[in-house]
Each structure stands twice: as C-alpha cells, then as structure tokens.
Length: 266
Image (cartoon, rainbow, N blue to C red; front, side, top):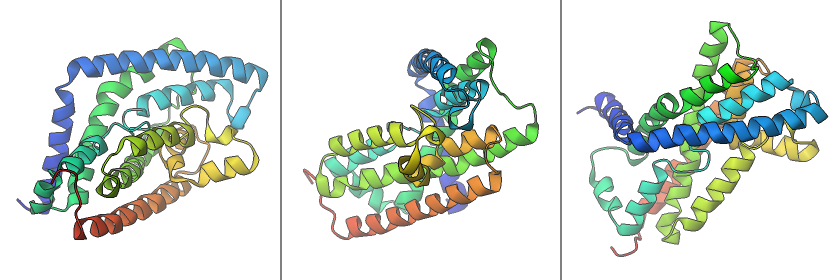
C-alpha cells in the first residue's frame, strides 16, 4: 500500500477505533456539558465584574467556554490521545514492531491521532456546543465563511496538539516512564491553552508569553478566528509555524531515540 493510501487508512482506523467506545463517548459528552455549565456561570460572574475582559463581551466569553468543551478531547488538551499508547509501547519494547513497519513512525501516529481527533469533535464536541447555544446567549456567527475559517484553523491546531504530545511520548525512550511527563502535559495544556481562562485575559508579560507559546495555537487561535478577534491568515501563520517547528523537533528526537533504542524490559 502506497503512502497516499496508507496514512488515510490509518486515520480511518483511528476514527473507527474510538467510535467503538460508545459508553465512554456518552460519558464524555455528559462530563463536558457539566463542566461547561460550571465554567459558564463562573465566566458570567467574572464578566459581570469585569465587562469586556480580554476584549470579549459576555456572549463571546460564553461562546469561548463551549468551544473549549467542544475541543477539549478533540485536541487532547489534557493529554489522553495516542501518546499514552505510544508511551506504553516504548516502555514495554513493543515499539520495536513499529520501527520494523514499512512506514514512517511519526506520520503513522499523526494519522492515527488525526482520526481520533475527528471522531472526538463529532462524537463528543458537537452536542455540548449545541446545548450551550440553545441554553445561553452566545455570539455564534451566521456567516458561513467564519465557520469555514474556523474549520481550517482546526487542522493545524490538531497537528500542534499532536506535536506537543509526540515529543512528550518520545521522552520515555530515556525516562522509561511517562507518568511525570503526562502530568506536565496535563498542567501545561490546561493552563497555557486558555482552557481555564482566555489567554487574551492574561495580563502584561505573562499574557505576552502564553500567547506566544504553541498551546495558544490549539484553542485560542481557532476561537478568535470564529469570534472575529483575529485575522484568519495571521492565525494560520502562527499555527503553521508551531506545527512545523514541533514536527521537526519530533523528527530530530525520534532520530536520536531510534539510533540507540533503550526500552525497559526489552
């Protein structure tokens, strides 16, 4: 099978794999909806005290919350994508089988994670967002071009997300255990992506720093594209730069790891 057919097939396989976990998907929809409600009422109280915080009005802030819940699992902002399986395969030595495949290791796992992400936004992301739009006053654009621009921004956001988590997974070649790295990914992902509070609301130098980090390409950029807070081309350029940088870094680390494979128990 040529590369033109192999990696799309891997992506489809990733989609189908996650589609089999129907109970987990339903539980995830419920969880995201509950957390969305908690965050919305927190935001409403905060925006009552500080109107236009971060440049958003209250309706935009509410929209941001439900976008975050829609993209939470899609972008694996707290971890939990294919990197967990990859970490386990490195630790047990099963990664040797992957290295013998006539396929590029990074592209294989990227394709699998893209399939997972597409399923998560359809299976777990749409319902909470629609619920939010029906229950709350949201700044949902009626311009189809705004939605198209948002959809385009999701693709590099997915690649950036994978790039961060792939680097974290490769660290297990040296650390032999990914627990600490996974916890770091979780904390950084929640804080630096803007999941708790929009990065536009962070003050001074701290705000400048977090908005320049790759996590900003995941949630903040797509949200600002949809809400008309940033020009799509500028957002795409920022996302693409981080996507290329992270994939290149992953390629270098992968090359170093596979030259001297050290795995626990194998």
